[in-house]
Image (tube, rainbow, N blue to C red):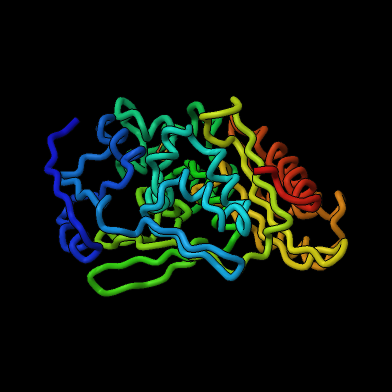
Length: 336
Ligand code: SF4
């Protein structure tokens, strides 16, 4: 690990002022410290933000405000979240391990970096995300966990190939729930809809999000709860726990009798950011909650999907996961 300086701040304003060039915020450190050990991240300074507050959850049926430093386990078990946003609670509990959830923060989860093998291992020289312009080892390499939607590859206009996926479970639920991210920087505060917070790779796969280097995430807010009675988080993975999703689906339905009034549907493990399809939601809204409706929504969500040598199976897997998650959501919510 490269040598680095450590500083500790006690307020959000102090945190922003402490951000020198090539400094990084240290929250739970569950991703950043690993990447520093591997030599992928090499900050000159770590600014410890664990003592600046931002560690409270306020949640009821009218909305939620989640501090950026709320731990994943605290958020998953918060009574207001469990009662009103069970989709978020279940997504969080399906991620990582109990020990990691006790440490990992809401803001850090939003900023998680891909687990692409070639990004994580500096022995591989070709990775456009780690070293722009160097190429993409995953495209012709082992690409089982990689993207099938929204990627930059040989068929796109971008010269900078990247087929990485966002590894988070929490983010997938936040997309389905229409969350917003409150951030603070030298120019003041701004609010970013979470669906715009993360980027597709395009010409700059090295940039995961729209957060500026001098900005701090303050909180995540949720609108009034619509899916408290009908939602499901489904995660398909290679083993039952402590594994990233091959495909995940966050499905929320607001029902009007047997018909779907509104829907929130997002997929994880399939793209550089959680994949929310307006076409799929349109295919659900106003329709009866039947398998046929759900199959049409799955086709809409996966329109244009394209796999590679080792992950082509994910296209059909994702469709089946969408149908199953919607079927389960139409029947109720997961047991806590
Ligand atoms: Fe790097 Fe993206 Fe290619 Fe992985 S998929 S090797 S992160 S450029």
